[in-house]
Length: 53
Image (cartoon, rainbow, N blue to C red; front, top):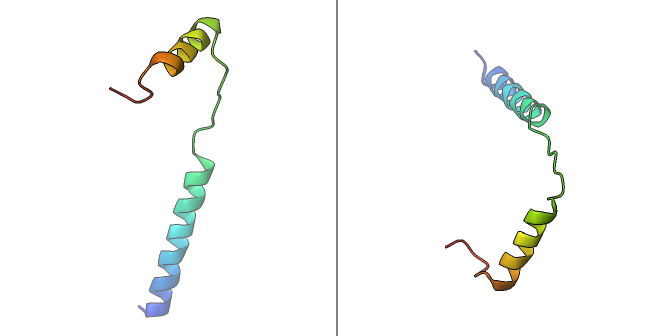
């Protein structure tokens, strides 16, 4: 097997893997929070430490 064939084949496999990863990635279906969780989030932003603890 020639080196050129091996390198081109590897590049083709890598490109296919990247394309498949972009096609099959999950989509974001983000919806706004309801009133309870929005109020809770605002309260935590005001009086919470602002970091995980």
